[in-house]
Length: 159
Length: 295
Image (cartoon, rainbow over all chains, first blue to last red):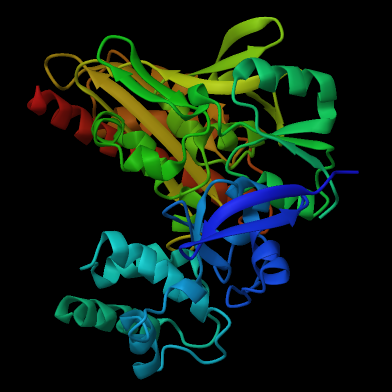
């Protein structure tokens, strides 16, 4: 019944244009239309954080944002985190601290942590844990993830 | 998800026209943290989502010391606690805004959406009630106001008529020596639905001991959030004391009509009502005294 809509947005710094139905979530469009499959589908109801992206500067669950809402907006996904010179310090810290096992939650955690460190580069352990309460990991028990974020803070400061 | 149409009107007039035309087949989209999930899980069926986030009135935050706070219905939680004036003058609203879901939810979810969704366990509703917030509703017949405590009529059902939408809250400026607090009990630290929620507010006489007026509001213990007049009566025009707080807590327990479910039994909830009412009143009292010292 509903026609497809043209959406123009900036995704990872590049202009993007896509057709979508109003019922499609931003997550669906990122993965299925734009083939940016780094963003994961976990619960698909706003609880787990696996689908986290930074939308208009704010951390959101892309499974509960409609793709049409992105028109005129900016989206940053895990694919946009790596820098020209190599991995982002958060990515390096996650690898070196073994802060992942199965990896499904990892893109969401890295985006979530990046959104935190972008505006609070010296967040405390308590602040990291509170901030990431909406990111669920069933493998690690969280401790290594929190340590990786703290390590990333040190790496970012050293740069 | 089932197909539907999407519109993002830029004015209240256009939004009202769309909502009037589609009737109960249309629903307002604000942060979408409830609505999109409900539609995906087939708990709600609709033909049109009306995104109201391009309407300036819905996104407004305006404070004036004489008229109080105008808070747009779609203002997301993060904008409430990041706002220096709002967070200083209405800390009880921040209590609620800071514990609804996680960071990702707070960046989208609004107090207007929380109210319209009309969950008995909504965290921000008791906080709004103890600040005496009034909802501003626009519709085909013009604008009307409704106290927040009258907005929810049943679980998931609100007082909006066809064609109407919630535009904003008008929240009076706190009187002198005023404090408010919202507390929620959940069995973990974050990311859960209230077993019981409790808002409390009070203002003190100039002796900083006598309660001039008070409000207690409860969540998750009745089909809609409750304003407990009897608890306020137990405190008003009396010295703030352990006894008076105990009487208010008993009144709150008597007013609660909890059910037993996966989150707790009715007896457990009634016990929690007593504990949370006492704690929320003590915190409100502390904040009222701090407010007096600041002036």
